[in-house]
Image 1 (cartoon, one colour):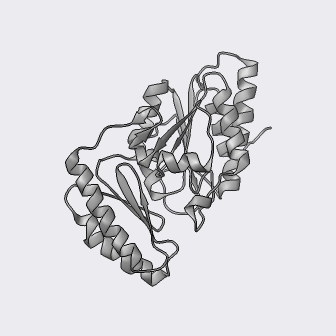
Image 2: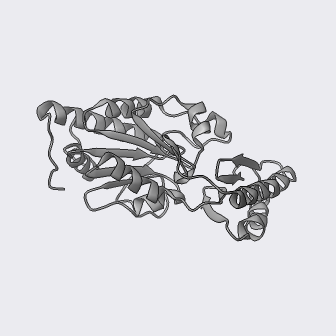
Length: 265
């Protein structure tokens, strides 16, 4: 398949890299954002494309998500060839990035308790616990209820010393260790010795990853909103088409030259 758009041209160059790394966020990229996070199943075409990419020579694939690895595993069975990073970089597929100490654990328990109490006072508020953080979702709450709850979180548990705050699309996450998707992508790049990285994300928290990309990398923002990414696609279906196209390009490249070299990108 030939794509003469600017993104298509960039993908062809990426497909010729010596050791490319494809990294995707999950919600809003592989799966649509839905009211019930437990029902956010991925678009099958995207999953198939990632499986195929991960099976190709010298081609690396990873998912970096704010979800815990436990929740991610409940939604889709990814093969071991795909690296999984959860909790915004706090959990790697080979084990927890680092242990949290007793002080951090007590802090996490305290803010989780406070958020749980707040969620119980209004309909549509959800608390999601993770190994080193807790997420407070208010997307299912009425607009005014969500705004009041968010303000209460900001001036309450989010203001505690030692708490790191990340805000996304109608969610605020409180962590007790300092991690982000940018540092996760950097670690993955080093781990697989990638000479080019493609990152696809849709949320505010994905901007940390876009900020780490080099001139030979590709950043793709899904949906609207300001971004550091160079390219933009519309939605999860558009993401699937992009991944399928990249899969075809990479396979064709390897068939033509089993030892691809970096192109002039």
